[in-house]
Image 1 (cartoon, rainbow, N blue to C red):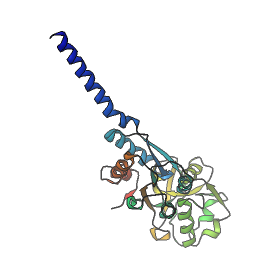
Image 2: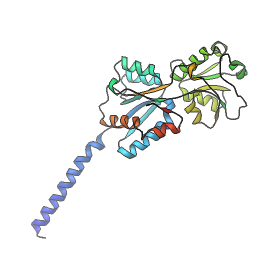
Image 3: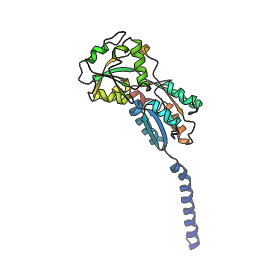
Image 4: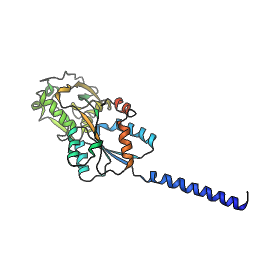
Length: 260
């Protein structure tokens, strides 16, 4: 090869390198997709997000907390791209405050409400109208998520419907979110707590001692939507993945019901 030929070959290779780098740069420059998700989703969503990262190559960061806290943070300007609530009310709040894109909203998952005790507890109970919840506490407290938190609202609704709320209302240990309520029981700080079935399955320190009838509280539904302020194109890709059959096994493994 002549000197001129070698020079042309070098310039061509350099040009291809510049073009390749230029093509890859926008992908690398995209910020992570920021997901605000209900605390009860942690295990399942962590697994689903890991699969999405491996498949799409997009960076994702997830912030877990009570749905009420997350909705208020978005309302105060938090730069979330995707919101997954543990109930319809807080997604309704986000929609009414124009914090989400309504066209992307979908009911994603379902769950169940259970009564849990420390793993070595001897307690068993058939949950129904008038069941002896106060007596089962034996002077201890009942762990619940806070009043504004979906799990706390579902629990109160169930106890009121079953006619036992007044017997335990003065004997509660309130937590910031459902994982906090689970933690109180797992650490044996309280004898009983009310959490989602999926949370109970994620902690070997507790066991389910009773399941609340489905008609004792509003349906437990997890809606998902893109936020109105999201400008990250990868957020829509993640949304479509989480709605797809490819993500279903990660949720079902943790005990969620994947809604059609």
